[in-house]
Amino acid sequence: MTEKEAVSELAAHVQAVLGDGPFLPAAGWHHMGAVICDAIIQQARHYERWVRPRVEGLQSTWPDADTVIRFRARLVDADLGAVLRTKHQRKLAAIGAVADLLAASGVDTRDDLHTWLKQDNNRSALLAIHGVGLKTVDYLGSLVGGSHVAVDVHLRTFAREAGLGVTAYLDLRHVYEETADRLGHDRGALEHAVWSHMSNRPKP
Image (cartoon, rainbow, N blue to C red; front, side, top):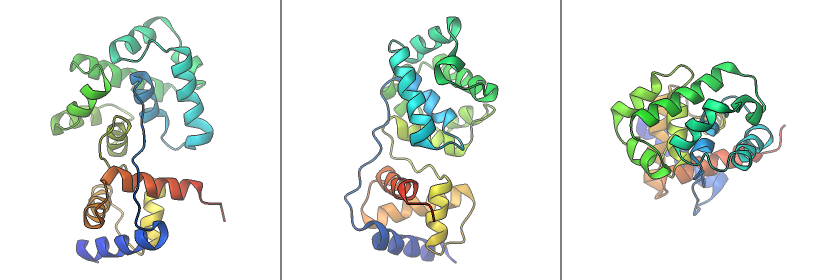
């Protein structure tokens, strides 16, 4: 299947299953501690049952950790694992490493991160952190209002049900991006529409 054919198949499936929209992108967060933690702890977890309560709890417990600098200050003298209710040391370490990188790069707010992620070398710096992959970087952009497609299990399943044989992350992301462009949707909004549909679909 060529890329053009894949885009046509996915576009037809989007229209058949989701309709013509309009689709709204995910709201994301303005609290930078929430942005960083959400991006890391969401991996392989049920979002509404496991991730959202912990991220909302973080914001309630550490309302002042709304910038990268303030979040890092909290990490020095408080137990993030207790706040997030997790003992997953690799993820906790990745959260600290992402915060350190952003602080060292002069990124402190949602708008700062939105702009910073537009540079490929900055995305590469994030990918060098253990526990951060392509999907995490794309998802981080979505959390701060970027028009990104973060390919997860839900988007993969939707594409497979559309008849696509594309599996490589970058290739499938590109097909989703081209599909959104063809149908006149914001890329991040199409991604969120597919994710919402698949995550809320009753289990067979």
